[in-house]
Image 1 (tube, rainbow, N blue to C red):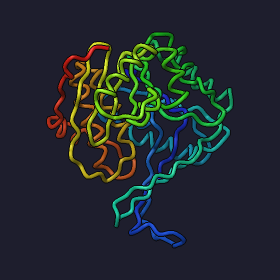
Image 2 (image 1 turned 60 degrees about the horizontal axis):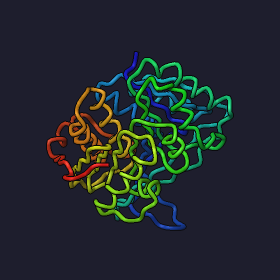
Image 3 (image 1 turned 30 degrees about the vertical axis):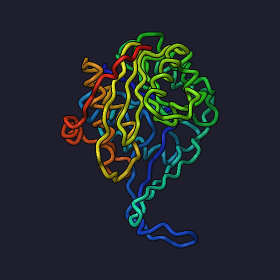
Image 4 (image 1 turned 135 degrees about the vertical axis):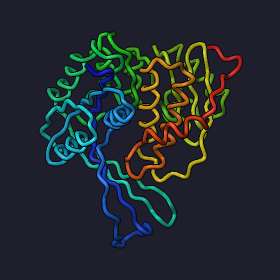
Length: 316
């Protein structure tokens, strides 16, 4: 049986390319397109598989793009449970401007799911949750899926696994009200959840304390981009530095952070080691084009450069 299952309710076929310079109202010649399987949970499962963790990716897929998505997932040796859908899986497009070295990400609406289709995804989680250590539910919700879907994921697992949720807004709050093991917001998502606009460390720590009081969470892993990350529990706060890397692509960096960190936790590493490995994973993803995600050799090389320190005097 797998150690971890991931759920991606809004998957995508990610298409990435580059142009010499982005110009309006101009036909721009693109480099050859790169196609990657996309969607939060699928990306996390790709990372886990590269790191030697046995994972199964659960996701809905339909149409020609859904077939291509499934083939690409299989090529990466990721085991899958694919829920067939009536509507075509979406495509997302990323364009890299070679002149400015800026990345433009075009994210389309997800394919609408019927109640039967999204319920099948929940049923798949319920079948496996008693046999795995972690359930990772990640990504946005497509049309047709209720706002409290991630709360339903928590209830479907029936307390048998550690639930990790990586989403935003109302969908995230529904999961937190049901109770989760770990969330991984970025700074903007964390500020939105906590209702703050500041980003200094004391304010972030205080906001974390309020979230522990308000919701059922064990761990908050706050990714801060080039500034590293904060990891909070009720009795511990850890700070990790960022690494000076010029990104080839930022797509999938958060998923790489989460996949690397959970792989460490699944191996019974302590929180300090898990945070270090997570930051190394997110940093390693910056070296890959498109949604290429992190590579194990890059994570192992970068991890030694990530310094993790305890924040003195913190207690939620």
